[in-house]
Length: 176
Image (cartoon, rainbow, N blue to C red; front, side, top):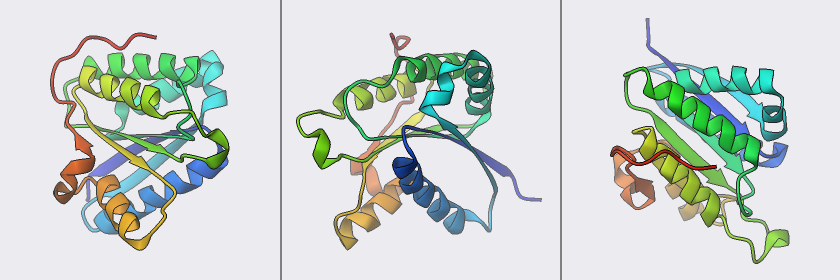
């Protein structure tokens, strides 16, 4: 029996969820001989409802891979930050295998002038606080070469260190 790799994806919209799901599917295809996979999906809007946010928190605390898929504009919504803070705190109570937090964002031409940096910085800080590895990647894919780099970084392959930032160090708790 193969070990189970649990994943959770929190997403801003269907368009970015589709792009993130393509990365998940690539990873499943690459590693299917070694693992079984399960992916839970949570839309940002649903995280406003306390009961659903609690369920999403439990899912993320158990997951080995958490994907946060956004358009990359400005700050993460408050309910997403609350969700992240809760599952990271819950995850920290249980010492398990390594975890990976992945930030996938889709810079859009209609959002010119807004930066993904606030989201990147918050998620990188959360990864450090939770002793997780962290990968950030922009989509959509503009060329075949960038497609290869994105698939490699999403698959967490060692050859893509330029897209990889280790969170395996103690840091202060993320603030909301």
